[in-house]
Length: 331
Image (cartoon, rainbow, N blue to C red; front, side, top):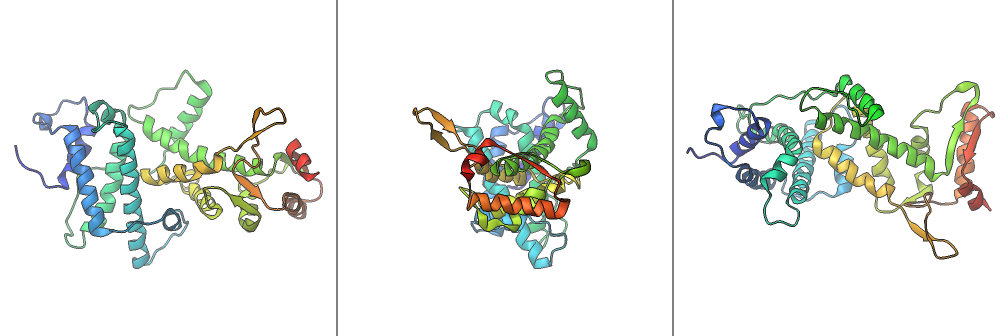
């Protein structure tokens, strides 16, 4: 059997995972999936040490990756790619640990279970590694593969139908489930943040005059303009808002995020949705949603500021349906 260069195991693993169950003469002498994965893990560690060799903080990664900048200088783009590579390897290692669990090695069945995650990691890493390798080897290609980077409308539409008709899913091309679910994650993440922004004020609904609808990002923008009024546990408000704005690229521009970007965004934002358990007079546990993980300094003043801003922009005939919690906190 021929020996392979370290980087070639990336292509071998990608090819094997992409062709599972498909007869192919090139797989007559297969390399074991578990062995190929081990080689890929070692290769990524070596490449990271060569081209990054630095441990970036989560705050730095968010600043670099979740911004809406369209054009980069050459130096800025290089720093952006270093941050991408660092997060890719860090998130890939987290995936490997999740796959390994309490075992000393990763089972074949577990690799198959996470096949789509691994395929997407390998493909997204291809661009990063080729970027760092090509200054010394202009013809370097990690492996031959092509995948559309666009989010397709039919995937979103089928997801909408599936959500409505569950548990009777509409059929769609084989292998699209993971892609469709990834697309859904971006929409659901943005929606979750928007609903949370509304709930931290204790707002049930805002009705404007003449049937005008409040923009989806109105509360996000208000919070961004008044960040000093909010305190969050375990997540920086600035980082949260950056990720919220970043979701636009997937939702409105149909740009597919790299798999580690979405994994990282979900990880960072999860802390925003943690609940704080409190107890009633009888000692029974209750959950106070409003301040579960957010504190608003001078709650009444901040809510009044929001009301005044809404009235100045949309007219005095607005109706804010506050929850009972708002009323109790104002007393």
